[in-house]
Length: 595
Ligand code: GLU
Image (cartoon, protein in one colour):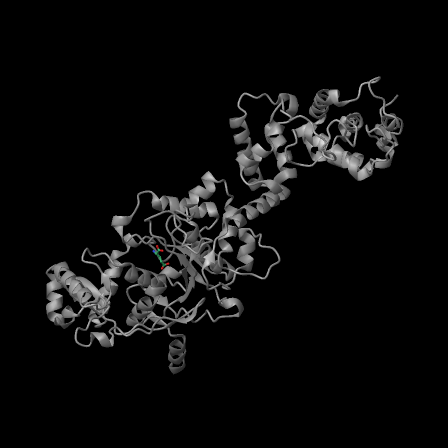
């Protein structure tokens, strides 16, 4: 018996009557290991107020809590802190649910899913807060304050004129217990204040030992003494954020509270409240402020925008945004920064930096391209979604354009999927992708006049246009069954520049290097096939466009550059380099045109 009592004391367990739950010290199973990870499962929560939508900073808070729970095999809770009914935005709660689910942060307990510690909306828990506030009053840790707002205003004015810090003079602390009970029972308007003489220090998981160990009054106040004595219950019967937050974290058995540094000044008060209740506080970890490159706190003006603008307006993948948010303050020892949510769940720890976190949006686009590549390589629903988005843009932007002659039996979805598979590394948004590759979605492409790349002298090119025509035509001689990237790549590689001597210069007997010829050939083919737009490589472009469309574009290109071919009789190449090209077609192998 004695042993059991000793053990219970050692575990600092107690029964919270109001909660009807056996709560054990939050610290009991959460001894820290390397990386500040608890040894046991962490119960974490995200506790948004429906006074706004989820934005980058709050997504990060939700994510860190989610990841800590998942990494340690614990639970992630969602709690709606809607005690400030006046500031509640209609529809915000539903948006929070939608946005969290979009990001993949599914909660184990909370609204919509339930759980053993509900309800999970604070407006439905007011009776519980009253019970706990009364408990503190009856034990002398809190007291009813009947001061009118006029008196409190006058007090504040007086102190401010005297250059003294604001605070309450504890007038109502002297009201006798019996009188206080009676006036409260009669319904006289009052608030409940915590009686607090000093604020304890606490050990933050990120910042270490912190707090000001502030006593509730300074020397300055000796004559005109005031106290913080924060309000726990408002006169409308609703709890303040502080009371509801502490009661709920305790009753919901939260072991770790990860939240933004803007809440750090409130934490000593929360710890004082835990002490007044006789409860062990959870572990607190405050994550640094998000700032822009000039050090300004992120705000609506500088992109701390709500999630819908990332997902709906900018077309950022959930995986990208989650990856981006995870890197805001968390550091890891991996070689790459590219992680999806599953990987983050395996890797996360509490190695969180202390300084302000600079948000660099270039990284967001880097991650978007990296994840696009991963989706394309892996296939699956995320890739299908990407394909679908590009399809929608193409159908919208190219409305009326009949692509049948290019598709030739393929669906637009298959066609776009093949394009995305080879060019996903450049994917930022569906719009940009469709724009960058717009020549794939046009039956008539508008090419600028052809200009060689290996010389600036169009009339006197290093590589004759005729040899480019011949080489381009030869590349199309692949039979349909072999029309694929590997064949085209091999055919182009097979080309040996030394056999393609050609020049239209007067002393033209120069053997072109393989490099020069290939450079010009690639340049010419890109111009012919996609009007010189950047995009997939030539073998890939030929494959996706298909044999017919490639031949058509190469023929069009030839017609457009015919005028650049020297006319017989007007000027005959002295060294017959072009003849030599025609004669020496061994590089084409079996593709050489039959004579
Ligand atoms: N309701 C607070 C908020 O809106 C929660 C702060 C906390 O996590 O304790 O951010």
